[in-house]
Amino acid sequence: MGDYILERVHHTFMNHLAKDNHWLAFTFLGRYPHRSTLPHYLLRENYEAIRSAPTKVEIVTGNLIEYIQKAPDGSLDKFSLSDVTSCIPQGGFDQIMRNIARVGRPGGRVCYRNFLAKHQVPEEARSTLFRDEVLS
Image 1 (cartoon, rainbow, N blue to C red):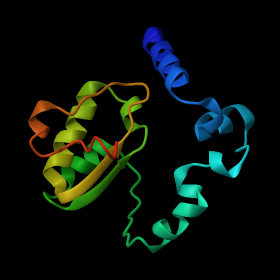
Image 2: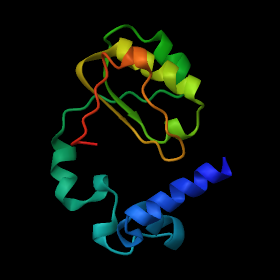
Image 3: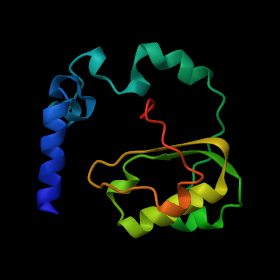
Image 4: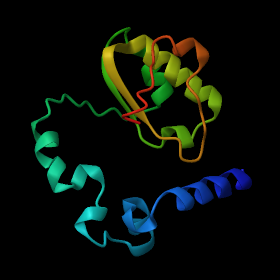
């Protein structure tokens, strides 16, 4: 696992400027050094789009795998799995993705990051879940 983390850190530093990375700035400085270093959701130019977006958010506290297994087919259309994939083994990720394919509505969106893991969408979910390379 140590080699994998080192490889991911090396990749990040070789491909992204630390001065422009909001996560690194906050981690090492405890603050954002300037407005352009803020996360996307805090940038002024994104404020109106976020504020005017029609959303219905329901906060659920519990086990994600158990929750999504119980969700009815076609009942959800947005999934934000921020850093979830870094914290679970491939088998748990596969369960989540298979269930997202089942409960997701047509045209829905899934957002997840693979920082410490290189999980791939399981084969049986790829006929439903499509990667948007441009957006990614």
